[in-house]
Length: 402
Ligand code: ATP
Ligand code: MG
Image (tube, rainbow, N blue to C red; front, top):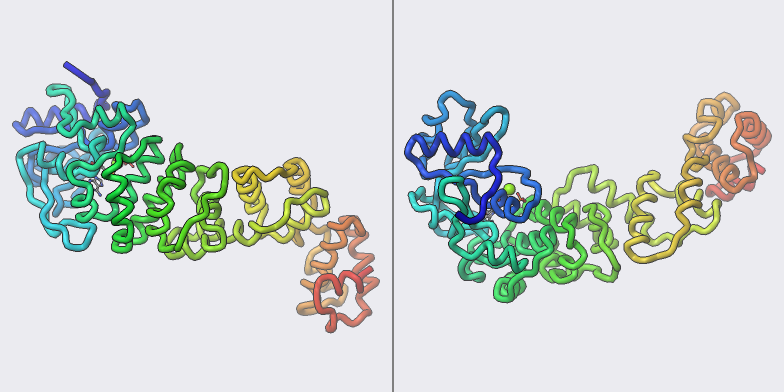
């Protein structure tokens, strides 16, 4: 027999139990594709001719979670491993460009494979029958091709998310998109407006973090722009960091924060993009003073680390050592040898406390003051008697302090 895929013990057991009960059962979709490619398999999907209640009966003794009962998906837990087990089905009519109005359970594996998006994702496998590849998935894996099962326009018309998934798999696998699939994806790209922002985000993150992310982003710039609802994306970089927040900043520049916000990214991602974008247009620091000033102005040091990644992707030369060594020196108010309480004890009140701390920080960064308690107390007590209300900004305060 042909190709063999190494099933896990739990998947082999699950398939055998269903088969012994008289049903057909196969590993299917992404796990089969990744098994053939020799990629790491992160989750296993099994499809079976058993109906949901029949699956539950077969696994009466195991834990079964009704993940998506209506669509025929149950999660069966075998020895701690969660395996999504789905009844063979074909999709009814699509009316919202995303989900079929109904699904119909069927007995034919081929009908279930035919509803799947790409040929490489439409294969099934079990140890008894070997690989079942009706649509030429193995050939397309060999040729490195993403190709719709059936007519691309029809398939994208049913579910527009597939348009972005094509670009995503092209990035993750370093495959090219077959011509008619690519043309349909391009022509129908604005249908991505129908897709929920969360789904777009999930596919975008996988695309941006794929091994061929730079090529995929460049070749699918129009599709990505449509998915994100922007006029165009920036593809002028040489390389694309495989880390979504940095990559979003690279392709979207000043539109990045709005974009990730509207994709409903989590707060950590949004604030990372925001912190990076705030300093994206800063000149490259060449001196310790410039590096300290950049770090001071950045929301946090991680933002400057992200900025170095941006420079590297843009082939901008920078002196990493200057920045790294500045990171370990005082560049934030909290690094100062005095704090707000110290200044309050000296008679500073209200806004003057924060102003004085910032002024001290500027003096330390410029090398005019040593970051010791003694030195900073001396400077701040000497200037305490001067009026500070009219100090308009940091520089003004700094002048008054020295
Ligand atoms: P990943 O490694 O990211 O999990 P995957 O191929 O397993 O990739 P999933 O989104 O987990 O992708 O979907 C599992 C399978 O379900 C796919 O391999 C494909 O056969 C099918 N599938 C998923 N989404 C769609 C869709 N939008 N249209 C048609 N078939 C789909
Ligand atoms: Mg999967």
